Image (cartoon, rainbow, N blue to C red):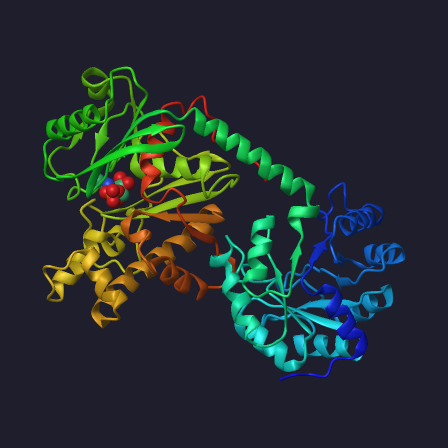
Length: 537
Ligand code: BMX
């Protein structure tokens, strides 16, 4: 619907077109959060080439208006316990912003519950004779805002609503492309943190780009640099060899400056003797050029106690021995090394160098041959002398209906793991389908396979909500061949989102993907020295 724009509206949109809008919003309550400083920021960004500014709060806006002739996009943020909507929530806000001198008023245009409806807010903005900018999260929001007469569509809230939070890592270029087709002025906004991302927004069809954090949130920008330097320092010290003996495969890697330099893999024979596992590890290491005395970290499926003794919890994954002095034997037969459970190792890697960095209450869950995990509580890896904590796969599942090979009845592992999926397939007449084959069928839409994969994801979603409820976990990274499989995280997300807000956590795939146990095994070799409690927020 092509609208006839007022001369004023058209002239402001012309000023914004093809330009950079700087959102001058210091960290709430930080030392820069003062109208004088916000004004100075606004002047500075205009001298740097911004064509307009986005300003939060009436006092800031009044102060900036006095010294700036460029267009101002005004918002008021309010926090409420009853609604997640924060941007220009009240009809009264619109009046205040217009009186303070805003040329454009931006409002939350998502369909989430709030005090005054988005329709009323938009009408109030348009009635006040200023430009309405709709901060949207999805294409549906954009379509609705366009139909209702908003002049600017912003991608501002993509990644910040429950529905879109899984896209919260990168800017939403797809939404820019889709919104552009609606024939309105599109403002790219949200995580355009580098000049390169901002120029990609224009290439994707945006009419203008708003950048906030990367320009005016000094604390956050500084923390990013500090974190990056900290990671680089840590990675540069990460040199040596790592072993990951998982339920399905055994991988051995040479790691240089935190990067996998070379890796070899063999199938894990679950029924092999302890001696055979040890021999295989030694052979693979020597193939990669390991020499006694090189830094060596070993991660294994199964429980590892504080003495480095190795036990199967699930007897069907490692069937041949009840326990073995792995750490002692590695040191004796191969060289100085440390041993840790595979999922705990991946948790360390994610927390120290990946998706969990800076998080105080974080979990990693691997869904693979088994279902394993690890917990970061109050910034530290939660372990004890037994080595059992973190084995979340052996907690009980709503969907459990058989004895797990750990000896517990109805565990998450007995429902959600690769072995469980394969045996459920066999039970309904598909004896040759392993988990990979079931996934292939499920992705092709075959009903029985969809049901099995979905049951697994649903059990993991319940586990996720339990971790949130019992431990206050706020972010969970998923790994393992099933955890990383196409579409699996979306399924977990769907089941979790069906639960009340209170039980939600941020869900992501593990940054180190399949290499988490290797990286974590090596990190574990100097765990005492590298403090996992270090965090930057
Ligand atoms: C099982 C358990 C965990 C392990 C997890 C994932 C055994 C032998 N293993 O829950 O210790 O972390 O599987 O490991 O009891 P995977 O590589 O075997 O899938």
